[in-house]
Each structure stands twice: as C-alpha cells, then as structure tokens.
Length: 142
Image (tube, rainbow, N blue to C red):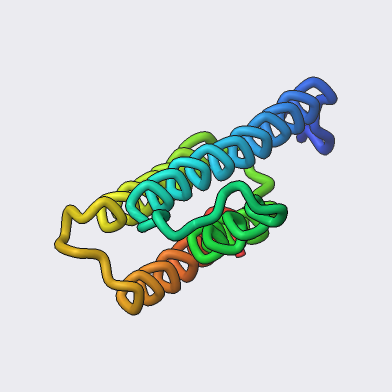
C-alpha cells in the first residue's frame, strides 16, 4: 500500500500562486480596457456642443459626466478582487460576462436599440453593476 501524500509539492504551490497573480492582473487590465471603451462610446454619443473644454475644471467635469458609466466597472473590480482561483475556465467565463455587458451598453449608447434615454440608461447601468457584482462573487466561489 503506497504512502498517502500529506503535503503539497512546493513547485505546485508556486505555479498556482503565479497563475492567481497573472489572472488578477488580467482581470484588472480587462476592467480598465472595457471601462475606457464604454466611456469613449458614452462620450461619443453625448451632446458635448455646450461643453466648455477650455475652462479650468473641464477634466473634472468629464470625469463627473462619465462617472455613471464607470461605476459598474468599479463595483465589478471590487467584487473581483476576491477571485483567488487558478482555474482558467472560471476567469474566462467572468471576463466573457464583462465583455458581453460592455458590448450591450456600448450598443445602447450608440443607438442600436433606438434613441438612448437617460432613465433607461440608469436602469441598465444598475443592472449591469448587479450582474457584474454577482458574477465576481460566483467566480470567487462565495
């Protein structure tokens, strides 16, 4: 009868740790990339003819204008920081959920579903944040 292995080999633990670190960085970069794409589409579709870009606080005003669109990605990343899995499929499914949500919001921003309405946009962003939050929790195994 073979002896039962009661400890994990150090190299396996190191590989698992490296995989977790890489996946954490990929998740962060993915969030930033999708947030930038969504903000760009949102600002592109917005009427900025009245925007005084030469004024002193113009950059702060743009950030405030884009805050509702950025919020789901902030909520999602806070939820995703708990993801400590070395399993590629879980992380890939989470990133696919983020990408599909981003695509739908961008399609709504550019008018693929009709003229964008601010009230509907608020509801969609709330639903998006909720889905991202729970997707991160499910991926983290909580």
